[in-house]
Amino acid sequence: MTFFARTTATAAIVLSTFTAAHAATDPALDKTLRDLDAASAKFQSAEADLRWDQFEKVVRETTSQFGSVYVIRKGSSTEYGATLTSKQGTPPTKYLHFANGKGDMYDVIAKKDTPLNAGQDKARVESFITLGFGGSGKDLEKQWTITQQGTETVDNVSTVKLDLVPKDPSVANMFTHVTIWIDTTRGISLKQLSYTPEGDTRTAFYTNIRYNKSVDTKKYAKK
Picture (cartoon, rainbow, N blue to C red):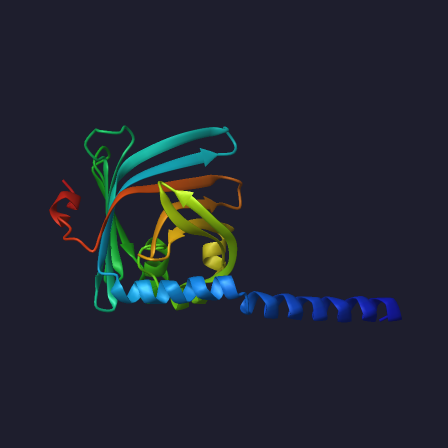
């Protein structure tokens, strides 16, 4: 290796070490993560109205789905449910449910039930599908490389903007990174923007949030 190459390599190592140390000691990010730890300890449930905007780069077209979603914390496990329809105000055409590492998605139109089984990846899958709904800062750090990008007001709520890069290669195959706008007081995200390797994006908006209130799960039961 030449002197120039050795010098360049050494500089790169020093720079990467400095960057990692700087990121690890970012006081603003550290405060956010600790706030999320505190919020997670108080989190019991959340329910919200949902809108998903899916942008497909190839056809340069955006399609939307509407519905509602809920997350209930039961001890160390999490229950998740959602309903979706392509036209706002119409009955759901899809029902999703996930609990104890297993779940299913039912398509009303196709009359098809697709089972979901996380197996040994239960903890990872739960942390992903419930991202921004009661997860702790410690859990977030385990699954993602996090960059704080300031604060923004979303739906009249002050949020912290975080960009998340997945540490798990299988997640990275689906999403290169995810940006969330999260209310650190309740541990709930009001907006999420996911980016795929193909250049597609999915933006999720959560409104009319019901925090730590009783959830009527019967309306999420597949019909």
